[in-house]
Image (cartoon, rainbow, N blue to C red; front, side, top):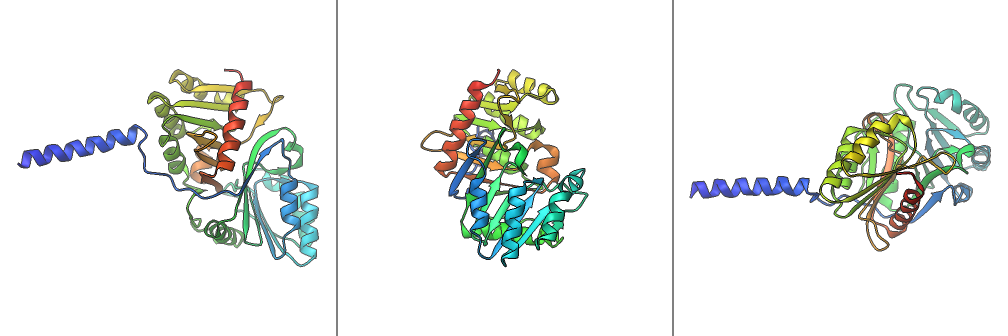
Length: 326
């Protein structure tokens, strides 16, 4: 009898182990997305409209800011009585790059804070009236708008907006604590697990666009998916820096397509798991597939099943893949 129990327990453990590595992960946490914008086709008027409609507050955390229209809009709102706060990255050369915008904003009644120099603040989000959060993969640099593949989404669920707002306040006040979690928000430091789980959950397809490919956990998750029969497609702008990693992916059955910068520069950081026109799970955020981005930086993304996001990613990534060189 004892031997039978032991055999049963072993069988259960083995079954669980096999199930996990076959992609039978527990469901990923998700949050609803109201709208999505695909760049460079759509442009940034949506963000300008959101800023101009603010009545009480605008909070922005951004890696790079060099957009005279956005800067002027923020100053106009601040001088009109709206509380405007901007958190700018200062690590590496970003403080020099962001200094002109910071000076203009400060002179225009906008509250500006610098993120700590020892940590990259790579997140890209805008909060309006603590009612809507706009989370993106791209920076607010007007010179990039016309040539760069990026995505932005709007999140309006109270729990998510409240969590982002609380985290922004802590970061802006230099009270660096763990980000406030809520449903499908994906924060860094520490976003590796959520992205690996999303890839491991796929049963048929995984579609990826990212600027970088330099994280063994992500790479091994993509390889594991391909080896269990999932169709894995990766689209990037060509860079010799990532040739070895892409060659390893291809040798394991991952389909890789690279674009030239003259076609479009892939700055997006997105994953679409089992995405079709009627269902799927999408990740959109600021996280590059690098150790720094997933382990150390301040980053923000969102995982969603909202069809508006799923369809946007599925159609765009497939179209980019078709244009790329295998």
